[in-house]
Image 1 (cartoon, helix red, strand yellow):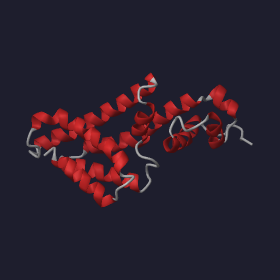
Image 2 (cartoon, rainbow, N blue to C red):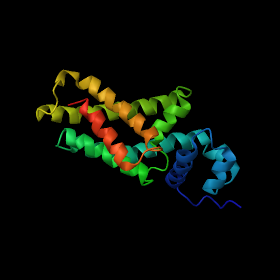
Image 3 (tube, one colour):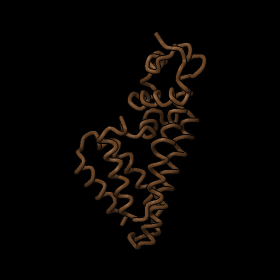
Image 4 (cartoon, helix red, strand yellow):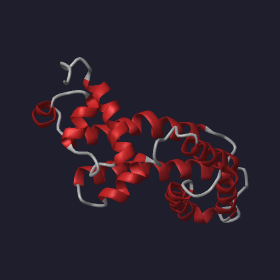
Length: 191
């Protein structure tokens, strides 16, 4: 029997995010969401809809996981080595299950594509932040004379976005050393 609503909305969003992260938006029914959150189905239908919880889960993911991770990347000073460490930390998070199933935003893009305009705005903002973070680090690498063709910075930033998508698949079939080798090989295209 579901409990009275004792959790804050933020706590419900955090727990809903866990379910969406592992099963995707389409893989979760309103009933399953209500059971997982230990609330009545009427709460999901009348107060906090599945769509609302999903959108706020994406926002929570950005604030809790990606924003701090990207802030740390932007504040780094080692240029290309900072990018390498960023990707190595991402590999560790994927393999050590800090991220229960790949990147929630990447999963959402793959699952939802362009089905929902609000979600598209959220993940476009996420990817814009990711690319701009790459550009900040690439500027530092250019300043350290680590990049042979600085005029290709825009293309390199977009290329690195593709590396994130690749990792979201490759971590499922490769071990840590293979993934690190993959990152080293990808970064060699940038220097």
